[in-house]
Length: 178
Image (cartoon, rainbow, N blue to C red; front, side, top):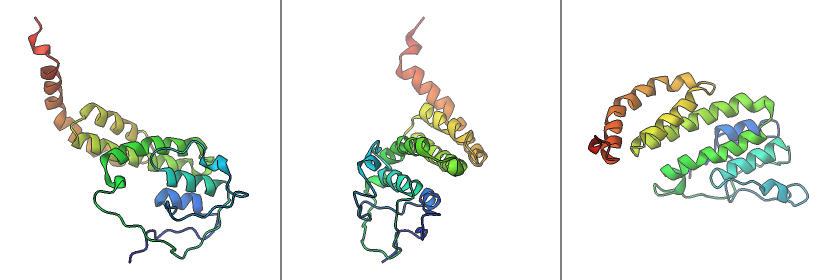
């Protein structure tokens, strides 16, 4: 067996920061007391990244009590939803919800993670041949902290751009206009 997370929070002081590195709250990994974790914690839950969002919300409210001993197993496969392009694209909306509740002290870390996520989304769109969406995600990733890390990726998009433009005009019948 392999432990799912290596960065498990040991106390409330590092929980919010650590969940941005690796999600430590899995669907089967939480037990909640209504007196501590009420229904409001489950409001605005995004469709994707929901457990990271919930863990982040609990961590910034300083309501968690953490046990570093694994108490459940998760079996992942290559067909797991979390490994799909759909999930990668959906993570953007989930992370936008995290940005809305992010305290100032974690803003740079959150924005850096968001930039990495936007870059990954751009990779998915490029693989799917959605060049315009790939460019859009890429451009947003560049303006985030550490966005310079993705600057050289621009060449991969530019190489595919002429073919994408040709396909667009050919597909939309522009070649038939006088």
